[in-house]
Image (tube, rainbow, N blue to C red; front, side):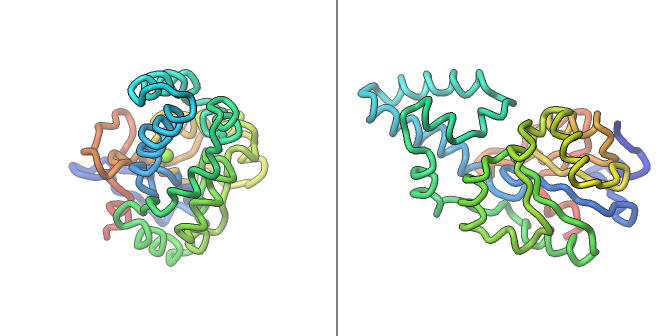
Length: 231
Ligand SMILES: [Mg+2]
C-alpha cells in the first residue's frame, strides 16, 4: 500500500514529508554500501576460489555458481554464509574477511544518515545479510555509530521479501507502519513492505556504482540516498 500523502512523485525525485515520518528503515547492501563489493565477491572471488578448489575452469565455475545463486534468490539461504560454505566447500567467512578492504560506502551515505539522526527519527538498519557478514561490514565501516539499531532478518528466520519477516519484525519493534519509511534497492522487498502496510517505500536505482542506474517501476525511487535529504 503506497501512501500518496507521504511521497509526492516529483519530476525528477520523490519529495518526502519527513515531518510525518518517525521511523526510518534502511537497507545496507546496495542502499548504504556499494553492491560492487558483493557482486565482485560472489561473481569473481568465489568462482575463482571454487575453480581452484575443485579443479575446474573459472568459466565453468562461474556458470555453475550463477545457476546455484539464482535457484535461491529471495530465500534466506541465499544470504546464509553457512549454507554457501557447506555447499561450495569454501570458508566464505574467511574469504569475506580477507577482502573486506574492498567494502565501500555509496556516495552521500554518511551525510544522509547524519541528517536523519539530526531530525530525531528512529533509524534502523534492516538487512538480509547474515549476522556474521553484518559484523564484518560493521567492523569495516562503523555504520553502527550512525543508526539506532542493526537488524538482520536471520533473527526473524525469514527474509525481508516475506510477510512473515514484516509480521515478526513489527511484533518485536512495534513501529507505526504509517509513520515509517523503508529505503531499499530490492523491488521484491519494497513490494513486501508495501503489502504489509509500510506507509512510504523508496527504491534505490543505482546499488552498484560500477553500473548505470536501472529503472524501478511502480515505486518512488532515487539513484542514491544522497537525493533523499536534499543534500
Ligand atoms: Mg540491498
